[in-house]
Image (cartoon, rainbow, N blue to C red):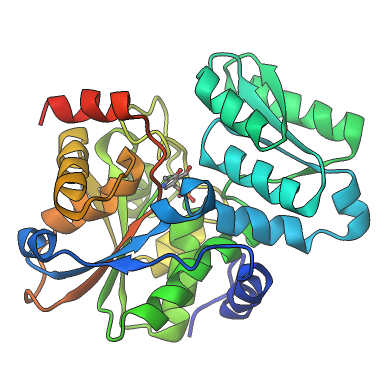
Length: 322
Ligand SMILES: Cc1ncc(COP(=O)(O)O)c(C=O)c1O
């Protein structure tokens, strides 16, 4: 029996009903060589092929589609320079409502342009967390828009959990699910869904060594926030939130920590062998699978490939050192 958390299986199933016509049901891909290298039977859940190139579109569209007409009319706001920003911008455009995305003034122009390209209004602020939060609150005060947190939000967690519902349909007899872990929205949603459907499935979070707050928190038995994160996996820099930590504490069996070299090597293998264009955050799940030891090579392991938003020049920089 799964306890009481920010979302439950019913909420995740409802989210799936709500979003299934607007998201891609992403494929599951296999590659014999990548399985052999991990000594397991590996199934890649290809969320790099999701709309906007990351699973984030699931949670964002779930929340945007859950707003009442009155709430929706005032629009949505978030602070993010990553995949959540693009996901929220597109979800808002699909519903025909305004989106305000607060970004640090040093966010790369390509990211600002991508968000603006989805029709959102980019609001620049000083590159500090305080400035981002304050600016987002100002936008809320001025416009009445609804603030949508990238991971510490029940509707976001429920939306991300739909990855697990699809995985169970696509891969019978799954033994292990590995998902990248930043703020824990993705992993929490997956853990709640998976443990509710089959408590025997092992749930693993993959974290970079330079942002391993979940690993340290689980060891200590209390939440230890991340300070000064440093990793190439730029989607995984964040700390857990008060909604995601209890799920990670109780329902996640293990956190596997991988360093930047292992992440870059995983990216390279995934690109060369399986033709998957994957960003560093998205490759951490497979990097963790390579590091883990499984009972037999027949162990069925799902690796969530969470995103693929990376430029070709950055890819060549990262894999040059492998
Ligand atoms: C590609 C990718 N993978 C994983 C994550 C981590 O997601 P969460 O913060 O829900 O743990 C992110 C977050 O931005 C991401 O962009």
